[in-house]
Length: 467
Image (tube, rainbow, N blue to C red; front, side, top):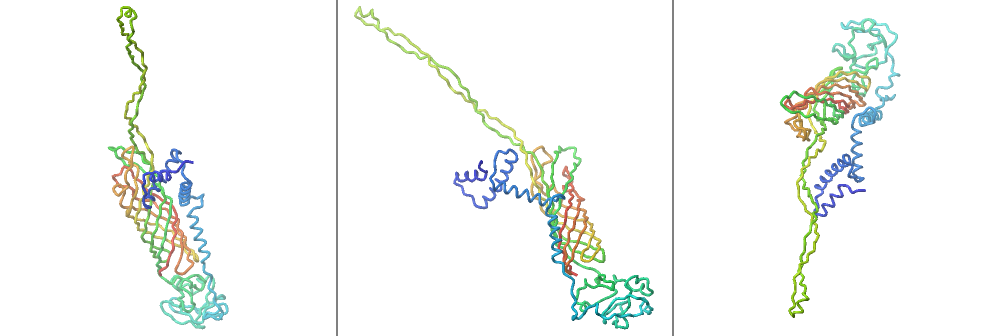
């Protein structure tokens, strides 16, 4: 198994007698990790260590877990299961009224009949009924802002069904306007537990205030089109959206079935784009060849003339001798060579907005569950941008994604369906599938491309009822 880039880089620093600080080494390891991944996935020439593969698998699992998918169990289903489980566990049981308490057992209370009903003019009218409800001996009813104690002679005999058909009762105000105003101290229960003579909850407050703290995750989509720029060369862009995250607080105002919502939120989105970078490399090539050759080496020999010995005068004669010496040599020439290399890379852009949700809703309540349909707009202001993107003006290279190319303001349409569960009088939980679509472009008008974002996801919130 080959060594990882981290080990090779560490040995290189050791050979240079360099010891970086922990902060510097942390940045170096991060850069080396991405270099290792790029080499493995592109060329498969470097085999990373086990720790690098562990980090890769962990990041891929987290990315797959956070991305919304209908077929795969992810954080959205986990959040919904958590809310349902928490709602079941913290559901408060129905209050138990003891026999010896102040209220006593309502089933053991005496039953009272009164053959007189009061219409809107205050004139008593006889009422004949065979069914009625039990009531406490002393209560207070408010009709036309006139309060009077109810004694055994004044307790109404109210029919259990079809009361609107009985003469006189059709003039009584409905329960929505507060037919029975019961003192909470008499029944030791909150206003949310007050019921009328039919056992239905009575809302005595004309309006309610509440506040939400929420976070939302969504899967984002992008739609890009080219703006007409005849005098510019436009390069095709390839963008892939990332997940959108949002968190914030919302103030809710509700009156009857209608509600208004406004607050402050932080939203982060982003996208990745691929681009090509052109690199020129200059190198020196050495061209060598071998040459064969040689040369003649000459020698002079002095030869004695024997005839000269007879005369007594020795004479030497010079004789030239030669032989060929073979030689070989290597010749080298340095030649500069320039090569062109195209490298593909991926860059990530992060964009953050400060948003003000402005929504209106209509709700229906069934016990502790309520269902609300909401719609509205979400204006936002560009807060932060980081990263780079593929340049549309050239075939190669990237450009920074800063405020010069991004639109400073955003406006999105929003619609959702909220499911709210209220186990306590002051506290509730909600899950809200939503869809939002940007009404303004991501880039400014001078940019050759225009992109609109849309997202679908789920918002989870904790609600506190102020009033």
